[in-house]
Amino acid sequence: MPCTMDVEIKRDIRKLSLAELEEFFLSVGDKKFRAKQVYDWLWNKKLKNFEEMTNISKATREMLARHFVINHIRVDQMQRSEDGTIKNAVMLYDGKIVESVLIPTSKRITACVSSQVGCSLDCNFCATARLKRMRNLYPDEIFDQVATIMEEADRFFDRPLTNIVFMGMGEPLLNYANLIESIQKITSPEGLGMSPKRITVSTVGVCKMIRKLADDEVKFNLAVSLHSAINETRSRLMPINDTNPLEELAEALKYWYAKTKRKVTYEYVVWKGINDDEAHALALAKFCQVIPSKVNLIQYNPIDDGEFQQADPEAIAMYLKVLEGFGIVAKIRKSRGQDIDAACGQLANKNDLIKS
Ligand code: SAH
Image (tube, rainbow, N blue to C red; front, side):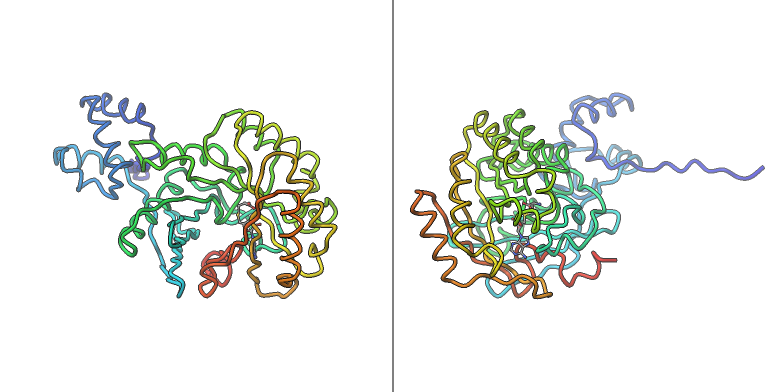
């Protein structure tokens, strides 16, 4: 008879809810409150191994290590830009890599985090789109990116993390359940205790999921990557517009505003010869009237092939004038961390590990 062996595949303890952890402790004849202690070590104190759980007996710690692992992310490579921006290439438990960025300004420290490995959306100006979507990130993998940047903010700047933006790799609304669970952990007092008002989730405009956010009455902010308020142009830039055209996006945003009373931010890049004319600026101003909103004019970060080029300063000035004429608040967002490819859309550039 062939020799068989019982190999237990250890579960990742952070995939368990508090209730499941309580059930586990009861099942091994321990006290229910032990779960709360362990949960606190895992999520509030962010421990990466069982040995450091000092208020728990050695025997219990060893028992936990026999049953579970803690699949914490690992910073595989950290790069610092001359403007202070830090980019972490983060390795996940299965060897896949995502990137997250710390962006310091005089008033804020912002964490820009990824929600998926790769992306399925094919926006043709974005470097991440060159990768196929490989998988969704788990809530703890999103949480760890924020916790890591929190530590780096403290270590390198001696300042707290103030804001979180879901503007890294992937489409957060296509990883909905894990996104929401990660934000619950990030905002709860047992987790990182961040205010949801300081969190912004950015989407290409998945209408069905914008409506779901509204139904779920989320308390964080919403940004939509618009880039054009004319269907023909937007479809050329972002194929998602074929199935989620501007009229539907407008309806979804009305629904969002009716339920949440929160204004939306539009992210918008002005490209030479694509959307740098007055017709596009006027269309944007009109779209901004659908619900209360503001515009971030983002500087284009070249992704090597030269097909897209940042518009001339005159075109940006024209946009600002048109928007101002309609009473719309617009800001120019300068690119950060360009020398280390940490700027928007560059998160996959030159990283062979992700491409493999
Ligand atoms: N999928 C979500 C989250 C990614 S956010 C979304 O699209 O909103 C990344 C932001 O950077 C988006 O607004 C995206 O349109 C923008 N972006 C992508 N590539 C860029 C580039 N090369 N230069 C400037 N902005 C870019």
